[in-house]
Each structure stands twice: as C-alpha cells, then as structure tokens.
Figure 1 (cartoon, rainbow, N blue to C red):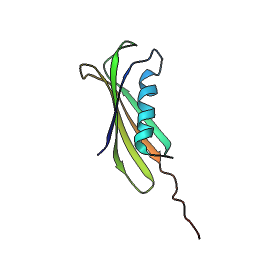
Figure 2: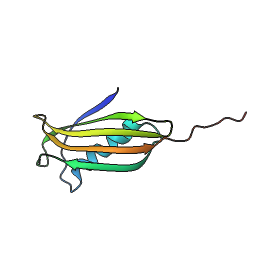
Figure 3: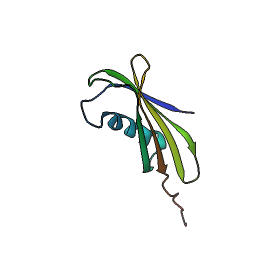
Figure 4: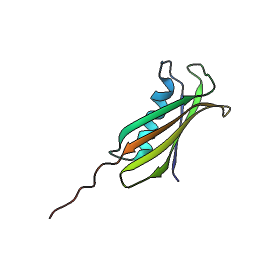
Length: 97
C-alpha cells in the first residue's frame, strides 16, 4: 500500500484542513480521478502556522471507483483532521484500430 506523506504548515484559512487533505487524496487516487464525495472530521484544534504532516492512502479500489483516506497530524502525532473520499476512475481508452 502506497502512503503519500507531506510536511507543511497549517495555513490561516477557514478550510485549512480541507485545503491540505483534499489535494493529497486526489493525488493518491491517481491521474484523471474525479471526486464524487469528500468527508472531513475534525480532531484536536491547531493554530495557523504550526508544522503538520498530511498523509493519504488508497483504502480500496474497484474497477470504477477509488476509496481514499487521509489524516492531518500535528508534530506530536495528534490527529487534527481525517478525510475520506470517493473518486471515479477515468474510463479506459479503447483503441479501435
């Protein structure tokens, strides 16, 4: 299982967790994957500017869908937020040659 992990700082924005978790979930889902749903759950509070780690991995995948999971962690390992998303895979290109 591939886990994507990024070190960054928490931005000062109303949707700070979403702005960090969603792009990594999209990346782990694969090229061309289109979001179907995104759910965020918040944990411990954190101030803008603190160091955080963002992780994402594929929970499972079917022929047409990817189910991904991500976490936003503080430097001490506290869970600041979790996210889960469903992505639709692009249709395979059929070469009628």
